[in-house]
Length: 490
Ligand code: ATP
Ligand code: MG
Image 1 (cartoon, rainbow, N blue to C red):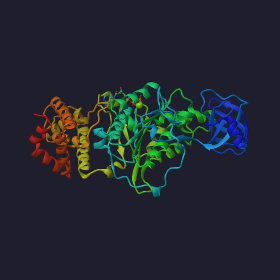
Image 2: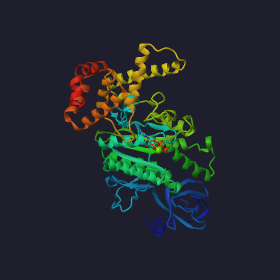
Image 3: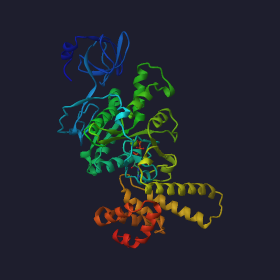
Image 4: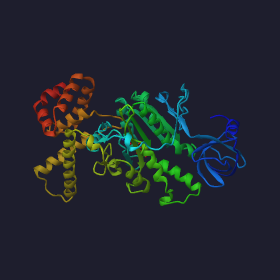
């Protein structure tokens, strides 16, 4: 940004602050001001125009302290932009791309893009057909996602949402996707936690953290997800698949509500202004699967997170977001309390487009597991009455228990889908009688798989030559001894 005098000379328009309400100021003057234009104050602060009446321009400022009345203001003639470029990879930046990490040697990119643009039209989009792996087995098996999908991550506080988002970033960054983590109004410790996780897994060069702190001015927190999306669009246009994680949009909605209530907008449901729907829909619509000018196919996958309160997912913001995404992953507070990790409830989770990206093998696996877990749930509700269990029922109970163990995963562990499919085959063939042996063996299998190219080739071949679950089971049955031997289990 240049100086106040520079813009005053350029636009030759001057206005005065008439009223100042925290981060909103009302300026009289500036006859040619337009919506979303940046306004500069003589004190060096700036802000964007939220609305215009015949007398006032309503301006959202980016400063920590209220702008005083009587201060002079001028137009800049430009809309809010942010610098974009590959330089930001590996950095933690604010909504305007200023470095946040101490001692950063980062130079701001030269190219800039506007923060608020219309979503890409339908003609430049393409049907979602590629699988998007999250590295979390229960999601990849039961709630599969596609590249370019928007999937809401919903759940009560402290149920593992952020951990899941980190796992997805770790998996995708290792696959070469550029990952943008938008930390919206987070505590400093949360931002540090994200940095530490990315560094530990050696993926910092494929990730960017765009962060605003809880103590930042509302205007800056409001812009954070838009900055993330703008950066994502830049990488997309450069031909890269991008993942944008927004942690979380509930906080975003709360800050937007605060700004709007200060601006005395008419409060709607739960005091949120009615245009909160438009705001979020316009933001999420910018994700998708796109066709570039050179016919290359690239995607922006978006995972917004949202808090629910006491398991109630029918809140205003939550249902709004559900209706503008392609499904949701539900983190169940009851399952979390029972010790299930991750605490994802596959029965309440939905993926509207991911299934169309799945192979027939994955689809048949999905069907079998869901049908077994459904039977398990029914039996569980019955067995409270102390009824006798027959051999069939027993089999369902023990298999379900093994499946839950199979889906158990640590907070930063990521899995390989092919390996998981083969392990599932072994489980389904009742390879393990005892849960502790199973846990121990799976650990060995995963370790060997990482280290041995021979094991990887074998697993790949088994999955590639099995069009359905039955085919896979047959192959695994035939080669079980050989397989376990190669994978280091005796
Ligand atoms: P918040 O509401 O604060 O954003 P959240 O829903 O994002 O919370 P996390 O911060 O991801 O939840 O996780 C809460 C706690 O649960 C953390 O201490 C985390 O280590 C633990 N946790 C989450 N997932 C797992 C897992 N798969 N295995 C073990 N621990 C986990
Ligand atoms: Mg979180």
